[in-house]
Length: 348
Ligand code: HEM
Ligand SMILES: *[C@@H]1O[C@H](CO)[C@@H](O)[C@H](O)[C@H]1NC(C)=O
Image 1 (cartoon, helix red, strand yellow):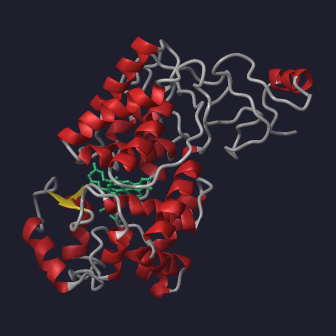
Image 2: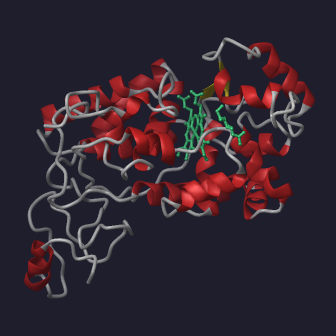
Image 3: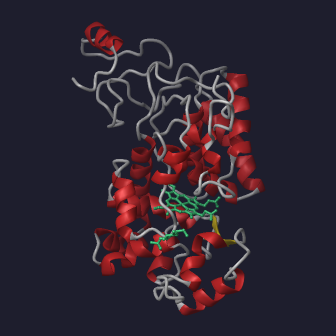
């Protein structure tokens, strides 16, 4: 019982030791088992968390998303990425949404995030509507998880049952953001290590990288591959020739850091499995994309997974949904830990 963190957890165990589990009061998380894995104790996430306290939560999220994504299809990608950058730093606790303040050093300025992470206005809009409908009920961390799922669905990707009940952190971690989120020039070993650190395996790594079927990257994120892949002033030899020349024409050797290119140039707004086909053809944009196939001389578990997902979109969609739930369960704050922020940018 080492994971029984708080004494009230034990009390509930005694009180609710009969066979049926009831919800102590609306929106209060209590189930047997620990979906989260790390530190969730007896409080875990479950899909019906807002069933009584804010039944319309997902509808509100979807209505705002539909408008935002119709206006700018890329927003779906940006919101999906926000959830990832949240979960890899202190768990899925909305730490990524906090602005600088006297007590907070924002993660928005980290290397992976600066000039890059976006979608905060859409999250603010969702939060404002949820506060109007169900004050101080739906956490910003759950909004990020709902927005990531909704964005996937609205882009043509899979749907899944989404465990809810995350609470919001009162802290952020700039160093965590710098150290835990893999850089785009990662080696395969680097990627596997950083995912393992979050309790995610190679299957999750490849499936979740499939997010790069939508959205864009900046020149600064893939320039090394074009001009100096291994410190020898040579391009990455795994890049297909035509694609390489195309990229060079939009991403100069110096300057132009913020010029963008689609991660999946054939269908940048459609969630499908072409990302994996492109990798097979040497047309993955980031080094971290291509090494899933070619890393360790093409002798990793990830190589076979890229091939399977390129061949079978259903297999990819299925695993993507599972891995998204797994990522969404990284060290959530539950029970009485953390808070439900009124404004996602500020601690209460
Ligand atoms: C496997 C390691 C990963 C690396 C190294 C990586 C790296 C990157 C980089 C460098 C960009 C472009 C940023 C820029 O240039 O501004 C990007 C974009 C993106 N990433 Fe990842 N990523 C990884 C995994 C993931 C995961 C797990 C997800 C989601 C579950 C994700 C979702 C996205 C999306 C949707 C975009 C496009 C964002 C937009 O257009 O605004 N990535 N990623
Ligand atoms: C990745 O890029 C960073 C920053 O430019 C650099 O310091 C590092 O050596 C690169 N890593 C690899 C494996 O090329």
